[in-house]
Length: 442
Ligand code: URA
Ligand code: CA
Image (cartoon, rainbow, N blue to C red):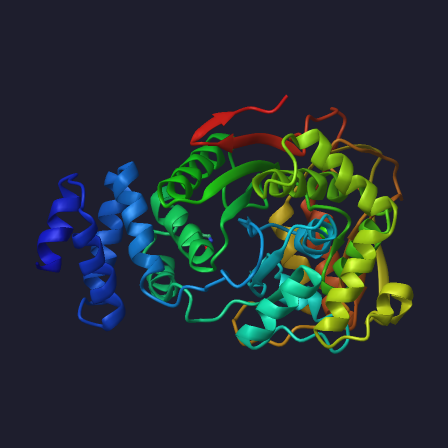
């Protein structure tokens, strides 16, 4: 087999066999196939697409390029959740203890933030002493004893994806649905869960700006999961504004504690209930979503989900004292309110710019090895569709550096569009896909 022939085959619209895809992926990881050949092949995929079976095989080849986590030592059906990335997406911090509090095991591997989106591991490190690396057996034992552990994803998972992503990033081939779908699914499937709930974000803060693109990505990912033997459900959810109020690590950890205490922003609570209910149904804990939502809402309101967070944080080396006294979270020295320059409706918010403003303050990374400031970030007080009066606070900035504060304030001010028309923001949950066909949610 030669890489040249496979590039030509894809360029002419052909479809690959599993053997061909394994040849390409294994050859690329081994260094036998050159970057320029893989780049040409990726561009051919960009224009020609992939068929359903072929895409499942590509994903399988990527999964098999590295370590596959064995979670069989954990009792019960393990359901994972993955978000395609957004701004202020605090869901994992709420969901992991919430789902575990309902008796369903959560063995989760998460990543760090890059660019305008944050990462769960950084948020968790806002709990003083929290360890994101655990020996494999310790991870399994912790899930068996307290039902939940969240740790960092190792580089050994789907190494083909890391290499291919780096190449796509510099060859204008990132935004190909089959390449994104196989990238996301290879990492999740190699992480060992039995079933998967995907949170596909839609809107100007997300990868997929339009609902039809997001729906296509969701369908492809659900088909890959089902073809490789894992029950998969995808929700399409709004990212035309930040989720919840907090954007920034310790601010989001604090917001998660609020939601787990039965308080906090309603949108974050609702989304966690919806994702969590789908996880409980896939785990076989409930037959219908309503009963699952009800159990989870009770656990937010009766303190059991919050108690589970404390168990997890202390099991992973933290003191958990921030949970009883949120004043102990790292806090920034400087505060500043960005105010509405005029009265009217918030017509839209440039969500990516809100994420970039938080990154500029030090909450996120522009390069993988940047050091972040856990304390800084934004509290978003006005969202699209809301009426505001002149002088009302749109966003509260938490900073540790005056110059960065001023730059972020200018960015945030420019990110808001206030007008006289009442807009129609996306509904929080804009769709649900299972078994490969998109059924809109009312
Ligand atoms: N996120 C991923 O993990 N992979 C992609 O290709 C795009 C977004
Ligand atoms: Ca948030």
